[in-house]
Image (cartoon, rainbow, N blue to C red):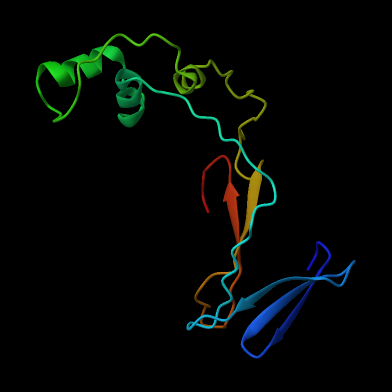
Length: 150
C-alpha cells in the first residue's frame, strides 16, 4: 500500500492493483485459516555467491571457531563421530580476527561519593506487569552512591 498499490478485499480474495496504472497485479485467494498467502514472483534474476569450504574450515565453524589443536585433540581421542582428518587451516577466519581485536577500556570519568547523600542516583521503573495495592504500575528508586542504600 505504501509503494503505490491498492488492495481490494472481496469474496474471500484480495485483488492488488497498481495505483499509477490501475492495472491488476495479482489476485490472492483466502486460505482455510483466513490468511492471504502471497507468493511474490521475482522480476529480476539474482545471482548468489557461494564458496567451497574445506572440511577443516567447516568443522572450525561448526565447533564455534575451535582452534587447530582442539580439533586435532577431538580427532585423536575419537570424541566426535564422523570428524574427518583435519589439516592446518590455510586462510584466516574473519570471525576469529574480530573476536581477538583489542578494545580500549571505558574511560574512568565517573567519580564516587565521599560522603552520604553527596551523589544520589534516581531510577524510574515501570510499567510493571502487576499493579500495587493502590493500582500503581510505576515506582521511583533512589540510591545513595556512598552507602549504596536504596
